[in-house]
Length: 285
Ligand code: PMP
View (tube, rainbow, N blue to C red):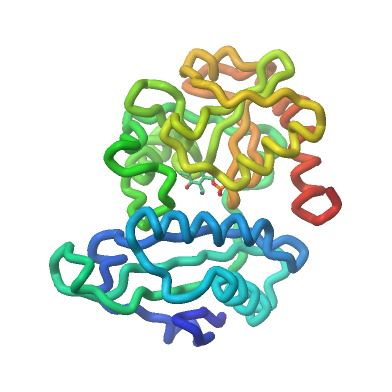
C-alpha cells in the first residue's frame, strides 16, 4: 500500500508522523472519509469543500490548494489500484510543543490513505439493523460545532461504546435539547406518511454529504423532504428509518430501543432510495 504524505507517495511503513503532532496530542486536525465507486472518487468536490470548511473553523491552514488536494486523492487511489474502496483524508495541526498554543506548531501533515472497507455485514442492508439511544448527548454546538469534522471523535466514540455494550452496531445521539441529532457516524432519516424527515443542521449534526445526496435524490424522485426537529417519539412511531453515511451508505433501521419500526423490515421508500443511491454512486443516476 502506498500512502500519500505531504506531497509524496510512500510505502505504508514509511507513512509516519511525529509523536509531537497535535493531531495525536490533542485531536487537533480535520479529516474526511470518501468512497470510490467503479474507479471514480464519489462526491470528491463536496468532501474537499467540507475539509477546508472544517479547517477554517479551527484556524488550520492547509498547506495546499483544494484542487491539489483533490489531485492528491485521485493520485493515491490510482497508485493503489482501488476501484471500489474508501479514502481517508487527514490534515493534522503538525508537530509542536507540549502545550495548546498553535503558534508553536508547524508543518500540518497531509495524509491520504486509500483502502477497501466493509462497515456493516451485507445482511444488515437486507434485514435492517437494531440500534439503541445512547445516554451520551452530541456535543453542544456552542462548545464544539458538530459541523466540524475534526480528529476529536471522543463524543461519538463514547456513544458508540454504549451501542456496542448493548449489542448494537450504531447508537442514536440526542442533542443538548433532547431532540434527535444523528448517530455516532451516520445521519438519520425517518419516513412518515410518505414524507422523508431528517433533523436540520441546527440540531447539532455533521452535515453529511450522503445525507445531502439522499435529500436531493428523494426530491428528484418526487418525495417530500422536510428538515425538522424530531423527538425520539417520532423515531418510535415512524413507518421507516434509515441511516446515511459515506462508509454506511444507506442502511435500514428496523428497531430502536427495542421498538419495532414500521413492519420491522426495510420499507419501500428506504429500498427505493437505496436503489437510486446505488445507481447514482455508480454513475447511472
Ligand atoms: N455524522 C457523523 C458524526 C459522521 O462521522 C459521519 C461520517 N461518518 C456522518 C454523519 C455522515 O456523513 P457523510 O455522509 O458525509 O459521510
